Length: 184
Image (tube, rainbow, N blue to C red):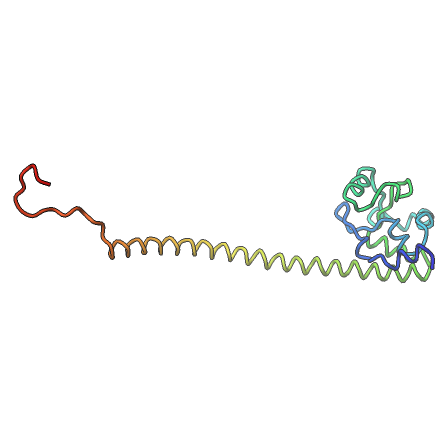
């Protein structure tokens, strides 16, 4: 088994899907690894069939985007990119790759990648549902907390009133009778 195929066998498909420019994408070098081909071969096939890859299927990263990916440890270094600005493929672009790369492994990997995109979409929907439920619980908790605060204040006032009834404040006792100025 070649080194590319071994690396692809251990690489989870979901780990190569990234978000860039508000879209889920996969870099050309990661796709080449998954397909078990050299990155230059993948790029050559894409260049030969450029009309199949409009901007919403594939775009080239800018120098700034590459720097951001390196600084975020998404890619270890610019050297890993082979000295060029990488292509980023959207889900539609990856689907189009199956018509360009005809190797059986490429077709099988395309199916796996499409399933990974679907799983990510399902997870996003599930997390949105969970986030909505959590927000609703937090709103309810805030309302409950304000009611509890009012109850605690009322209980404090009542307990002070009860203490006063049980133990009224002591006033100095007045002596009964006629007092002359010198006595206390």
